[in-house]
Amino acid sequence: MGGDCRFEIPEECRQFGEASFDERRRVAMSFIGMFVARAAPPTSVDDSDEAWTQSVRRRFIETCPEGCYALPSDPLTRKGEFLVDYTWAEEENGKRVLLASESEWGSGRFGRIHWTPVEHDFEKLLAIKAPFKVLIFSSICGPAGSMQVADFSFDYAKEKLKVSLENYGHHIPGEVYIFIDFPQTRKPDGDGKYQSFIWLAKKFGRNEVKPEKGPDGDLIRP
Image (tube, rainbow, N blue to C red; front, side, top):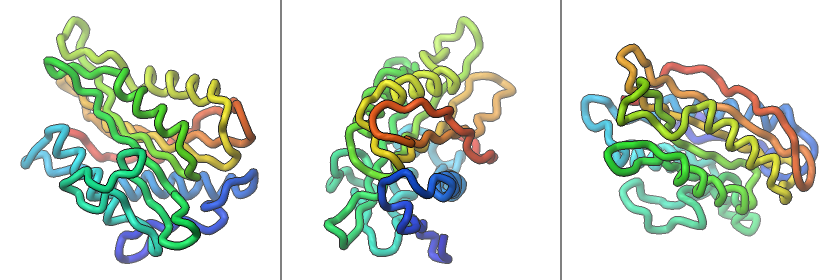
């Protein structure tokens, strides 16, 4: 990552294939650490889902690699989106998409968090062709009996995503899936620290790959 905070994706990781898995893993870990460092809005300003959406969008724009363009190009509008919420595409090379991302907080009525909209958005990432794919979501942890108890926890999301990835029959070797969870918490002693993991496709078609834990950090969602 350069001094201007633009992310770097080596050429060998911009191509599909069965090579450079260690480098792809390193790039994925680096992306998580870089991205979450400044993705959250100040808690004293606004902790709403919309504020988080705009913060995530700004982060994708400001870290877009050199020689690429980000869509949407404006953090305050959805105008210009291409297939998914956010993309990085090369200005040359036929506008090859290097990264595609969806963010979905799963918010529903009465503030309850639901897994279904997160799952629906994730399915878009399965279909799009890009060497790096990022899903950003917000699980929840609440006390038993609370109206705020979620339909999914981080472990629940991880297991559901793993099953979907293993059952999908059209993977391309070299695809890297990056999952970042900014959990909400309803526990008095909950810290809401982000959690992450990655998953790599190692062959064409269906894959059985153990998800790898992402880097630790101390970013806290309000």
